[in-house]
Image (cartoon, rainbow, N blue to C red):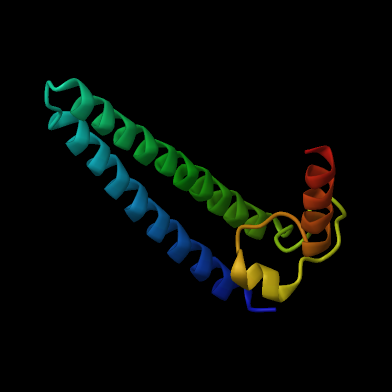
Length: 118
């Protein structure tokens, strides 16, 4: 497992990337709304674009929160433990998704439950 400082740096870098993307999306939304034209079809299309960009921004905002929570878990000494089963989360999973709170087994189980309920 990487050192605590290496993990922190990875999470901080991820947070910076997400914040930059989130800010860019907000700027695009503002630009879309500022350049609306009066034509009904065009206006509907631009409103749809702004809504889609807003949803993307919401996903990025949730990701930023997840990264900040991961940093708090790192400080608390609970980083790398599954929130569902309390087992260690694999290093490969943490490298791919440093903000994750569940191990691959619990994530897979959750997907199976969702698939069965659909």
